[in-house]
Length: 184
Image (tube, rainbow, N blue to C red; front, side, top):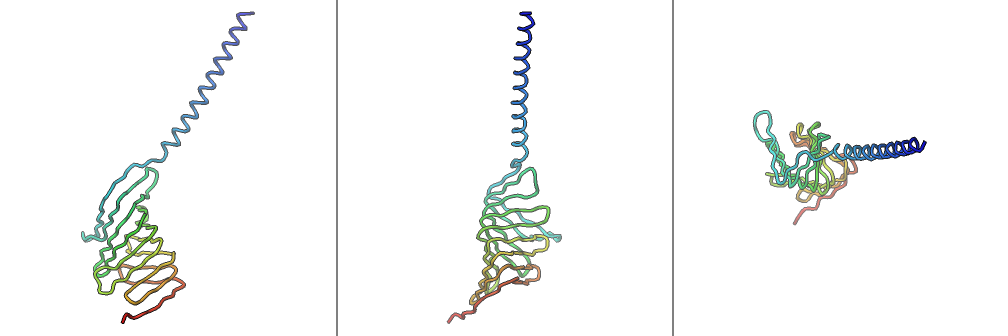
């Protein structure tokens, strides 16, 4: 009887120890699985990317101080992007603090202090906004945020814009206000 009682207590202790080990092991496995599901699989510092059109001519360049891509998606994060749109007569220099690259939709999405400056023209247009989406395939830039447009003596404010860089057309979407003050 004493032997059966000792054996029973030993069996209970072994089962309790085994149960605790399985619970802790499952927690560790769950934590490990959660930690391993998303990670940076590619990053670069101070890079330049040049995209070519179907004729082998540069269509745009993208420079940034930092690029980060995660394993679980097609979007990448960029810091301090500088974009040069290189259409024949409609060249733009675009800067921002941060941005995203959406490879599935050919989009560059810029955030925070976005500035577009027209290049190679006598009276360049400057556009300032907080967010801008650029479709690199169609060369169309869009914003639904407040925009400030400056060209020499012209000063405009609007809510949203669409810029077709291929045709050079700029459409202001809503609440357009502005003034023209000639410089003497």
